[in-house]
Image 1 (cartoon, helix red, strand yellow):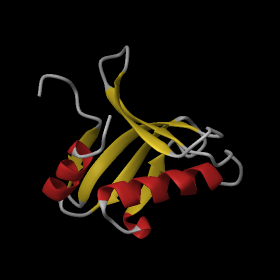
Image 2 (spheres, one colour):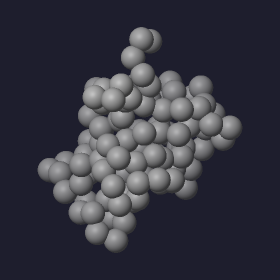
Image 3 (cartoon, helix red, strand yellow):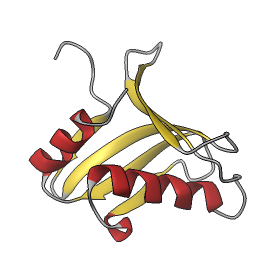
Length: 105
């Protein structure tokens, strides 16, 4: 893999870097986007509005389902009010990376 990954391994699973578009027409994971600074993020769209954490909750639910983990295993660790967020995903790193690879882009 010659392009940067949208995640970093952590002792308890993964740190996942996402770019969220709230108030979208549908809930969808659109794949990995290469940023101008050389980093990569996972593009996520949610129908929920960015009000009182509704969009963050929708992102957590969508990613938990896609990665095959419970919602309690996914949490926003930075960027709660920003489009660019870092999420902690608890679980087996190898299984999570495999699940990320299975997400259609």
